[in-house]
Image (tube, rainbow, N blue to C red):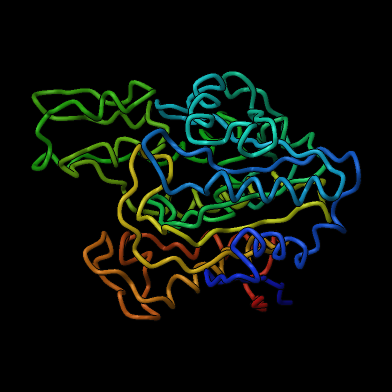
Length: 368
């Protein structure tokens, strides 16, 4: 059975600007029927790493907040701590980063609350009876919220091909324990011929899983949690993911975590994806490379699987930008995600999400 995915392109005029389109998308997707006065609504988004600029703009999030308040509900912005060192490794630095990136109350009109507490361990076990996991560890504030609105920047991702709503829910709503559970079977490998022993990767590893022996980096698979941070920190591109079944397993676990993040909120969830500044890497990086396609638009749905499928199709049907990280698939219809990460079978997350009943890959695109 197909799900509706509402779509607004980037065209605007005197009669309707992009903020108006965001509001109309949310209303068309049924926001008013989801919320009641007094509901505490978690607005799950990515605050963006310091130095990054492709995360969803705070002024757009403000319009999301205004629409929620218009229903009499009380929204709060939330994100979770990261596994790797950086500006979002615990609540104090994460919220400071969020404010510096523009998500202050004066801009967005809603308070900021970390979903997993001070150090990423405030969580609840949510039973899901998944194919792989019996339960998942979700940030307590996500679980306790009456409703959940996920605002996602759709882009490529070095571990999952693309990062969309499933990743925002699955990785983004998980506690630190949950993130480790999803990543724990993946250990990068070092190509010794490329490694120069610069030790940059040591600084990026939060788990003492890397050492320098005889001038070359070594990854201890027993200590590695598979967060992938060292992969993108290596200037020589000497550290790479071991592309095997573990990558698919991560995506399957991520989909099951996504199911846990919306558990108990039937009829109280809505997902928005901004297909803008489609960068080749995650917003977790302290930089953002040139977008691989031009801005496409914004989608909304109550089905996270259908939404991700629609966003992936829209990106793949676009013409790819030359002189970017996109190495193939530039033509409309070309696989843009394999054009950046050729080894990743990105469809796994969609297939598993559908299999476990999280949503449908079949959708009807409703253009505003």
